[in-house]
Image (cartoon, rainbow, N blue to C red):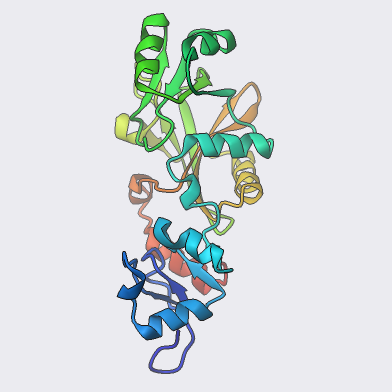
Length: 263
């Protein structure tokens, strides 16, 4: 799409890149016919569509388009798909089991010893839907509400490292330190943010994970355990409190990446 001066712009439906000069953001309309004729023509002609939304991503792919960010909407909030991707690509990830159907408790106890972590596998965030399961009563309560069940080994850590990457570049990183008595490190659950002593090895590992998983925008939660780095989770819809505490503006970061030719 071109502006009144004849300059060509790349097309984005979502507003994530709204401050980037080389993009034109059309917005996400619920119906294809909500777009004007010129907008439809521009979409059809564009080789790549940026931030197409859940609504249009598969449609554009079916029509032969490239989309950015890759591996974004399909993995957003879906721990099962993330775990399967990590396992497929041999990305270090805590031992995890996914259990469908009957006899879930028996199969879980055949694979895991107490304590372990159980999660709501789809749609949970900010530390909600995460439990440390200590005994059979807690497991029964969890399984009664979850089919499939998503169970993960418990790692005795008091912090994790959040690393945010855009277009393969680390743009922010910070520790999330659990409050006393809570095994969750989430800031929304009272976790403390710390910017001190970010290991370069962790940032290198995060870049490798984002590259092998084809994550163009992601906040990776990492931890150090038994002498190596592990990926706990990939977050596509991530909070910005860590950015605000550091005085960073995510939209300005996008603009700088655009002007640097990284997007």
